[in-house]
Image (cartoon, rainbow, N blue to C red; front, side, top):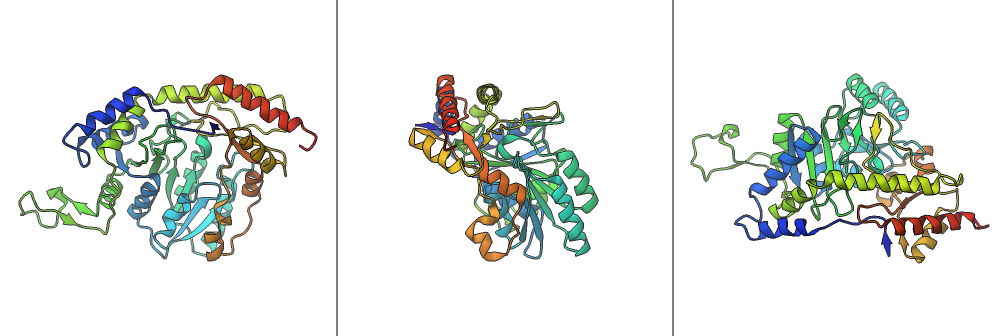
Length: 386
């Protein structure tokens, strides 16, 4: 089977993990801090908090921004459910932003329309979650202009986008946003097996996210209400969670981060190969190539299949050992979200979902396998039934 994506684990990654396993610290040691510092330096952010998943990162980001049950949060309609669930954990109302029908990324014009209407109703969102789908950056400059005008916080859900660049800024530097979150799941750009991270340039948000990730416990006497106690003393200042990343996972992350540019280069080469092999077939819609202002991390290579044919192509390719995938069902169409609100249907998100198919793309992919996958896909498109 050829997966749509998989981790790239090499001997140096295994050696890094073994080194920590032989050390005194498996958790709450120095390796996590090293990983945070190196990741923050890589994307040029001031602060980083490593956690056990990107979902945890989204959750503590919402907590740090003070989201509560009386608040409203806007989320890109096309994404993994965690992008919206992080607000629902806190009881906030979630509304969805339509997406561009070709890229699946947030439609800034629709966001502006929603904000204009929300202002009339005096129900502006506290937070907007903008998803960099497949690693292609959203138009952060336009979203930032709306952020300034309407006063919402901006979280970049960059689970797909480590290494992506927007107008000279690496995604994660938080030049336009309050917080950016990354995922280190095995299929992502780099992996810690499971893991995530919050990046910010705001020290107050950083301190809150740090506390929320570790039971709400403060150990720095400078910030304690009682500064007279000995070193054993600590204070629980918030109702936090055990979202810590272990040193074992962080060791893998550091090793992976040292190779991230090589991983990205291979992904970009394979994306060009896909484009060259598929561009002649006008029945397929290919993802927008990189531009001067926007460079994708190419987490996913998503093509558009002719209407009504995507599921046939999906099933046939998987039957033939090519594990393509679909990213994603619009979040509002999941039974849970249908049960809490009568959400409207969004034309861009629906169009994108009905046609999208993620093709194999990962650093260990063999060019011969890629060529075989392309030939199989093109053969299906040429069949009379397609």
